[in-house]
Length: 239
Length: 295
Image 1 (cartoon, each protein chain N blue to C red):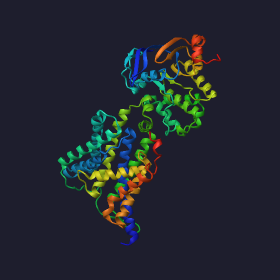
Image 2 (cartoon, rainbow over the protein chains, first blue to last red):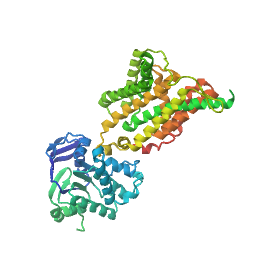
Image 3 (cartoon, rainbow over the protein chains, first blue to last red):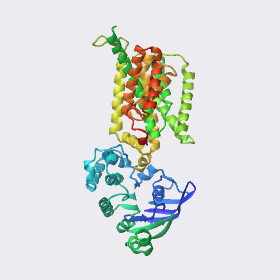
Image 4 (tube, rainbow over the protein chains, first blue to last red):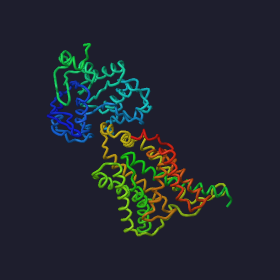
């Protein structure tokens, strides 16, 4: 479904990504793990068209989308839930969700959108009570749920999740992980970027390990969980 | 006319001119929220609105109602062209460079207007006659003042509806809060900016059109009105819509009462004195949140 073909990226002279090759099949969850500054977020922003690569192709369903504008990429159904949430703070929770469905605007989708709206409130029941509250007044966990909810309102064909568990309490992380698992069951293709490698590897089919802009390892997520090097570098001593 | 009647008169005048400032301030706000810049060409939108109206109604004898909408659309198109051309293609996207660019564009528009219409002040007939209406309590009001009020209130209600209820309005607010997030939900930021220039053009034109029968119009009437609208926007809190209304009304009242009770020579100075005072005491304006929240 998505093929990243020899992507390199520099900004302000520093090489952030060096010849990345990566393939993602329909319906799978692919995890991208690695430390800070490994280039994970850069890769997502390249896919979303926020930044341009210095070299390489990004092929989505047979089309090279490397020169597409961010809104055109969203129109194809590639939707990113960015790190740090990037909500529309002064707008209400309801408005944030409505704007998530911006790419499906127009009369035809009205009914479908309101069904999805209900579905998202069912995924994240806490949001229901907060619908008319400004997004910036929510707690960190609620904001992350809203960010994911806003992404889902766009009916993603491919969902890019950037650090969805960053800075959240364990219980909230659990809740978000179970939502990701549910989305996978429903057939959404997901590219998951996480520093919490253990959680990411547990729910993914396959994974790539990124280190200073290069792919260091790749394989089945379950194999990587057992890999000595991965254990040492990303899963901590206690495993 | 006794003193209280005089005061009532000043208040009516003040509210009328304040309504104009509020519309102008809205125009400044809309472009600021979309782009972060101050668009000084806003002043020319006002002059052009008035002059288009004059040309259509007086020179070409077009029905005033139709003229109103054509003038508005005409200035909206000019606003859009400014964005599609120079603003979008400016090499530098630095805010300060773009602001200077709008000052240059303002000069070009004003120069062109001067070539087309000359420098004379010209009158536009009032929308519904000149016979003053007597108010309860003894004051009088010219019908055009009522038109100014009514149209301003209508414009404000429409703006409120647009920004709170329509998806496009919400998308514009979202873009002003966080451009990157807006792009990530599929909003075309370029389109929003283009739209905001056209929108501000239309608003500037409305101000210029409705004030023309009261104060006459010329190729450069927009400068003073525009700068005072700018002062009103600052007073209310730059970028804030409720602030624009509040700032406009306060400024209009201060100006009218000041001119009447102190001296009409200070009429223009009052607005700029208020502007300086706000910048010294509370730069974020009455409704502003302060520097930290400006994204």
